Image (cartoon, rainbow, N blue to C red; front, side, top):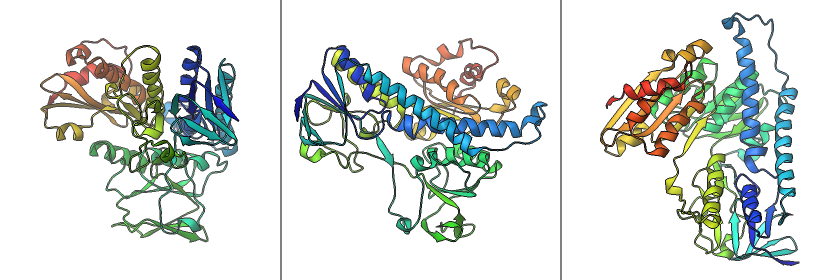
Length: 457
């Protein structure tokens, strides 16, 4: 079967469905191809289920601390099948919502199956051949599985497999000390598992400033999570108790034995089986589709959005990719990736909210800096909640009086960071934020004080 349409969207993740909505509303006939689950990573194996599990873990942690608040709870237990079922319901509800949304779009045809280019503007799905002058690739990514010695001989988990667990591992060994790994580490420790994190680097989440990394390590270790850094030769092997993970660290035992092992060493784009070579679409060394500032590939009429372009890696940046493409194609706008101010969060407890440059990055730029920090012990809202771990940091340009970046590691940090993100987006001077009058008692109310405390560094 051959079919001509006005546009083809490959992938029903974060950017695909809203783009389909805009294109069909503009009168186009659109084919949306999805080989697996509607909703992509966020809905099915990422944000939705993981943050649901994080919420359950937080509830257990807070219950164990009930006496700190003058509340009596005799016993706290984990019903892991119920925890998993709750996450599963969130997945199914979100997926169904997306499916209903797509089903109601006039002019849209959802095609199930694997898409592969036959030429620059022809895509085959099974026996069907689709042709369109506009093609949008939103194929997402998946967990990286490294060529690790012994891996082929053991059972291992990735973020996809661990979501489906309905029992608590006796000892979860996590290979990778970055964002995904640390969220699962704290979550499963709070569910009752022994947890060991094995990281090749000299510190956790190496892209963050050392003081942030150190504070996060202290938070996790205080909950009983074992951190093994400088793991220079990671390997795995079968063991009668589950899996033996060789670490060769400079300190501690050279091997960690766990019941389960989770690989959390990054992600890779789903671009290796799309037939990009047949279409002439360029990729980089990691397989990311190369795009320009407006998300166009090197082939005219083909765009790449979301995780597969390597220009964001977050649900919110994928959504913004859709906004950029739709605005430029349909609204006569000139939106560009270079205009985007990216923020993100690490959802341990307390969370880390981040935007812009780290202090390390700012110093490497050679510009004169202003830096301010404040411990969460001096944030009234944190004291009232009994959650005073972490600190706030602000980095600004001393010459331009503009904010360069910020980190809020503390209760509400993932929400409070948006006030700073908005200031950077508005290109507003420091005085604008310093003279704002936030609501008391909140975490955000300390941001003007943080600005006032800026000093040369």
